[in-house]
Length: 86
Length: 272
Image (cartoon, rainbow over all chains, first blue to last red; front, side, top):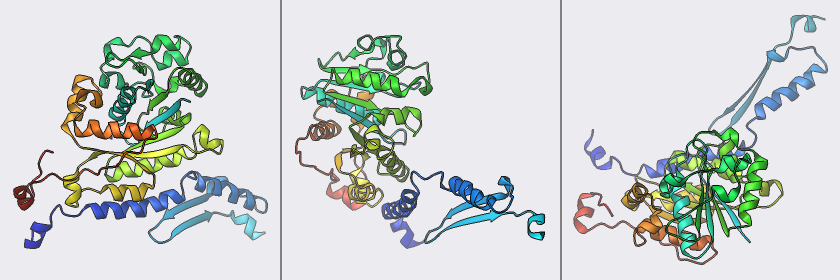
């Protein structure tokens, strides 16, 4: 522990708490009440695609990733070989 | 017109039961008729904090399920004429509560009391959602600590969406009760300040209750802290908060650090 650390220990952890909360809650509020968003998107996207291509419901993966600056919505659909071959 | 107030927090151990008992007693001391309802079915504790644990015969679940009439389950406080308790069941779980049943109980209580204080269990499951379901206003109990603030934010979201009032396009008035506040640590930058929590949660402040040994003493003795030692800092904070609930304008005093020159110099904490 350095000399400066000795005097700084335990000091001002409160601003860190405050900042972490502000960042976290901004995200959580944006998605509040929509905790089933990924699930709903999965259903709707599946329905839209199923109109045109026969697909397996289990082969659709929707992932929601919340980052600091940007959030990503990742949709992964496995299309059966024979559909594209036609 | 009677008012239903839910005392809620999301997180456990922040002081919901202590605050329910203290606010209920303070309102009763001010001449209001009050019932404090324990919604923590399976883990009841309000009876213990209020010193009525040996007088419980029937409980909320018995009334909800029609096994007992409301007056049979109500317990009158031994110290205050106008303070009553409706205990939770200790042997059942939250699934024993139904929305229709709780609504009936609330209607029955509205007819008898000025204030119905609903002590919510922790969490966001059935017990907590039913405790807030019929509330007109909410006291959000929060500690100046990250997990408590986060959970309070979540609860505020639920109060704005899952209550009868919210669903009917009305508002549930939400107020923040900051408990276990330590002014010495806040001054040192070790604990979030009142302003920090207020800025994050963005709801009006009902009161600040500082960390105090009086709270444990009162619960040891089964006496709401406002009755046990009315001159103590937490008792005064709760009494002021109760007056604010009644719509009175009471100046908010933020607890300050009480440190002498030597403590200041050496940075030691004193039990205020």
